[in-house]
Length: 198
Image 1 (tube, rainbow, N blue to C red):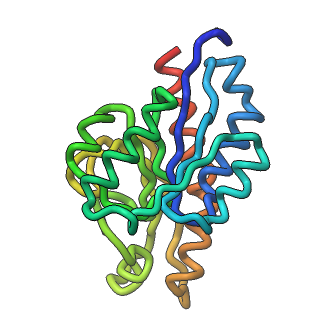
Image 2 (tube, one colour; image 1 turned 30 degrees about the horizontal axis):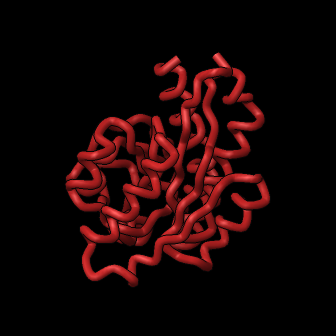
Image 3 (cartoon, rainbow, N blue to C red; image 1 turned 30 degrees about the vertical axis):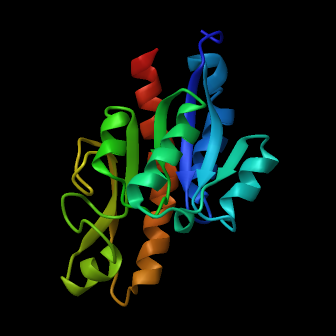
């Protein structure tokens, strides 16, 4: 199995804690030996994304594509596709990549691109999910790993985790509680996809 290269490319915009959780799980669970899979590249649209430092320390190839340097979303996505395709990935993993992708980009990676969203989809698509859950009086919030489709925060649900909304919660405290679950379910979702490919 180790002769098969199942390359994973992860896209980030910031700290990359979910990316780091995936990389650490890949090492701990021996994805390379078990599935012939490894994280081969981390790409960011921000040069100062802290996650790039971690990736480099792990010997993972990194690249930066500043979306502000492109005249259109389509032009940026075309260049991003070229950077990703250079690594011939079986999976493209969005881990805090703060860009809405064009339909052409999503179609190019149909069935191979996944995302994590900090709510129990289909509830609270888009931004400010934690504050919205608190404002609505939700007793529970959570996180969803899903396949990416052209429609924002839709697509087949692969994994979910539920966390309680506690009295006195702020968007920040709720986000921190949800993040601990993100670090558990995102690597698990990737691993289950790899198992299906084996």
